[in-house]
Length: 614
Image (cartoon, rainbow, N blue to C red; front, side, top):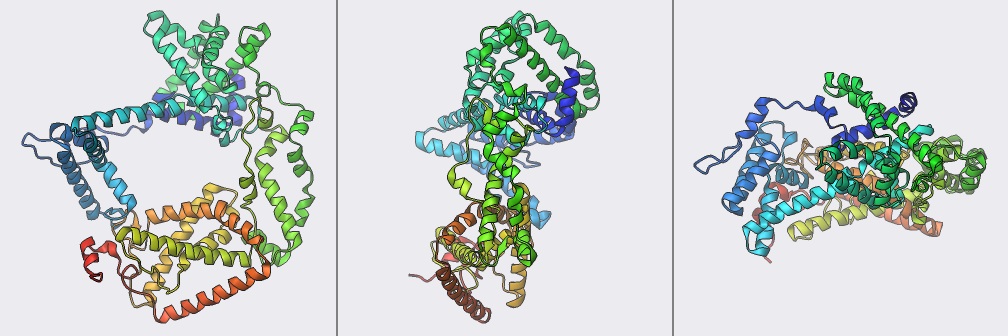
């Protein structure tokens, strides 16, 4: 079993280590494996303890460390009132902001949503706000504190029940599939969601924990029942449709006469555990934990085989045959016919555009004009993307999800129509540029109206468009075409690209207009020269993902239904109007409140005093 476990670990080292590391971080298993990361010194602890109320009722901020701030605010509320808690939180926040301003301007956090959230969390003012809100409803400060404690306990239990409690089932599924198959992807962490059995698995593990806790009140039960229920997460991972009591009973039956054997098997890893102890848990993370779990998974496979051979009660629940033997080619052909057809007919690849047209389409996703061969290749691309994640199963290299007794969710038709690897015609890109430039203008105007109650024409142009939104969207679609198959890289690249675009646009506009600042993020957390900030880049990254995978494909689907001549005419006219506005605005730019007068830089009352009296 150890030999088989080691072979399985060798094939799937990365994902096995990841599963055990997540379990360690969640505190599910392997808790002592993370001791190498604990770097807190006695001086750090002493410095935290100094954060407290002094006898004279004053408060001195020497350092602020997460939980210490929250505890201090709660103590202030309990000993005084909610206003006292707010005062303490305000003092902590002011001290932190002052410390940040003394350091790098990049880390200042006086403006912006991200800075506000960070300030509220680090100072503990969010606690005072919540207590005050509950107190205003109930009329009692104590009720507010109790409600906050109850809410915290409820959230903690919900996280334990939905995440910590059920993660052993998720990780065991990863190890079970890794016994036989060459490929196990990170998508398998969502296995329970795909079969819509996450809550059912959580309930089964909760019942197991309740039984184990009750038995732990007895000396014998604490030692023995751990091994009686040892196989529950494996059973639920194989069949999450079984009832909680069925899983617990089946585990007890399967371990009957094998508890001492399992204890000795675990004990045989003691040497590896001591080696991990000597390396402060690092060796456990990198080898011992995944190795031990892989070997114990083989142990479950043997207990399962024995249970089915002896036909013990409940063994019929263990019906996921393809975890232990690969399906025959005939079975795969019957279930994966559409996937195999795409795999076996690569002649569609010959339709891939060549020459300078092919260079534009294959490198940047641009089609000058939509031809029939381009449409055929695009259709092939859509089909290929839909079946790509099923190809490993069709080849027998990954678990065949279509043969699982509980059918996994299939993509909806709307999602299937959003072929994000499509190429866009010049007119589609132009329409997307104009449309998103107009949307950006609406977004900025709406935000300013909500924030200050003033309708302002945002942007340097006089027309209803902000070209940086349209240009950013088109650049993401064109420049980052090669990254679309890897969403994580797409997100990171979108952040970098949009950050560069915004920084350079700010610099060029400021240079060309004699030093006029068109926007300034000074005071925002993680800003660079006031031209870009982390908050804006995060929005750009998320917006870029939405554009690439949802918005642009939807718009292109709609544009394809429009008469091509009408589309060309409308886009040409609008673009000429836009160009005329851009040329005029270069000499006579749109300036004033909400454009060059950045309201965030002055107090709100100063902004209001600059408005007309009416």
